[in-house]
Length: 197
Length: 197
Image (cartoon, rainbow over all chains, first blue to last red; front, side):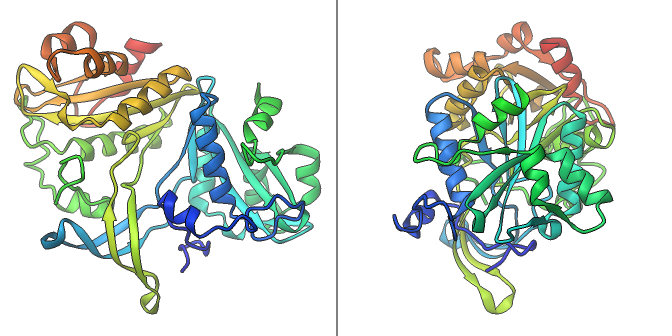
């Protein structure tokens, strides 16, 4: 099952998410193929929340409800996924507004912008305009490397880039590599500290 | 149809929301009975966004998906509403993180805390801890008055109040009355300016 943007659907409920992942799947081998990036970030956010480091939450997937069966305690019987017009994550760190999108790519040389929507770019431009911290977390699966890249670069490549992709070099030069560990899995706050504070 | 917290369900899609409101319903009479507070705040947020005043969005209603029919383009055939473990709205204004919950009450003398969840209180305590701006927008329907009250008061009454309600006087003394107009409908940013900047 796919989102409108072509991403694989991952169940929202934490229990469901955890149940469909084995220890092997979440192994931290340097080439983290098939890593469930959303799941890893959600676990990292739980860690950050429980340790009072920051408060960042995933926006629920917007769903367009067509029909509800009242006879069974508000059971939704007909609905569709809507395209996320914003980003997946936002929250607060050191009183600053944080807003980001996380994406996987199997590509080794560049990050294709094909599954980033115009709405998300517009949203991120507004976040930057209002003084928020906006970035992308990109997981280069085949390289086992995860980078934080400020949204301004993605906006620039999206709107003025010749090819619809961002070269890996841009991440190495302008991004911050995110340390992967056991807990937090994806320590992106450390990268935010380096980049923005 | 009701949310787990007892609130009336309002369709997520803007078109649906607007279609079920007549001009009469959204009249700005001083006693704004039956005002669709969520709808009015969403319209105010659209105005703020389009005029580059701030960027505040409503979190989609979390939905627990049980079954999806792939044969019809990812049609959700079985799902349930989940309780919102955070607040309904968050975003950025002048680089500060903003987080709030909006509620209606028909009560003239106090705001009952019955439909505020422990999860929401925990969430708001964390927002304040991390330096975010957290508050409630309470619409006293029968009085035609809307107040912004800092979350700290709500947390205090929720955790240590004798009665599970906040007296109207507390809003008059410690809150900021929000001006209602045509556009923006509910000018809560003006109240935020008075209170926090």
